[in-house]
Image: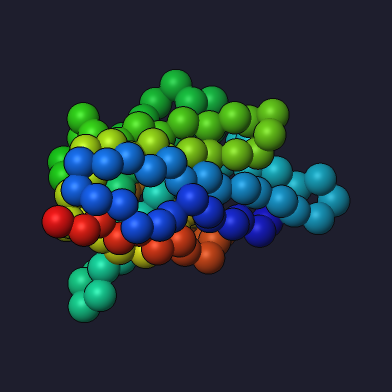
Length: 126
C-alpha cells in the first residue's frame, strides 16, 4: 500500500487547510479495512498523533491540541482520507503524514501503523 499526502502549504494564523491522503496498492490492496491516522512532526520535536479514524469512519480520535479545530474523514470508495484544519496556529507548523493502522482502528501510537506516506509541509505564519 502506498500513501501520498497532499494539500499542505503556507497559511496565516486563523486560516484553514485541507489535507488529503490517497492510497493505492498492488493487486487491489486498499485501506478500506484499516484504521487511518494523521501524524505530524515539527523540527526538533518527536512525531505526534494528530487524528485517527476507524475503518468505517464511525470512530474518530483527536489529540487535545487539535480537538475542536481539526476534522478527520474518509471516503472508503475512493481510498481517501482527509484532514480539515481550521483556526490554524503557528504551533501547528509541521510535516503532516498519513498512515494506515495494522488494525481496523486508529491507535495513537505510531508503532501501531505499518504503512506511511510522504509528508506534506504545513506552515502557519503569525
